[in-house]
Image (cartoon, rainbow, N blue to C red; front, side, top):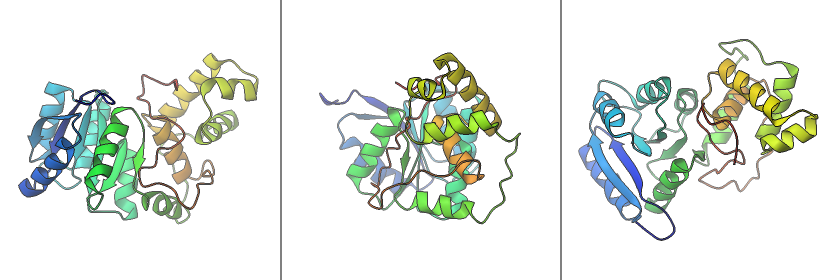
Length: 243
């Protein structure tokens, strides 16, 4: 453990033994990351997550028995407070979309440097969103080629206003002032938004709304960093308020 960061409890799931060893070695170099256990398939990963409740689960997408996407969906369905980081070789739109829809907090390519992977785990453990630099343009470009067909009812005009402000980085208090409503009302609207979009975090709600064309994407700078610490902090379904 370092003076700057508390110990982060991590489980690592990948069916490739050599790749698991490489990632483990990279993470342990951080000094503040403790690898609790490793899994070679999705079912084993779920069992370990349930039994150990780690801070972060680093998951490969393609694994026997259950994919990283399926593991993420089951973790979110059970509402286990675990940060989910997908580490994979795939950066095409279907995989990125699936990761976001599954409720993962982060998506980093295997080509990322050890320092970038370490920082991604730290960010996810703090509730931040982590997306590879190439992911956002791909997701937003994919949105233009698909019809807005959310699984649930469309958002109301007030919900769209609130989610647009969330996408711009506004806290609940700022949103309340701008819309002349109470912070409690903002929380209530966010709870309904989360339910309609099947989202478990502010980040996921915004990205799904952008994907479905319900809100416009914020203007990101062209030199957007690799670990995209989006201005809206991630929060699980039972923790709606930003710090």
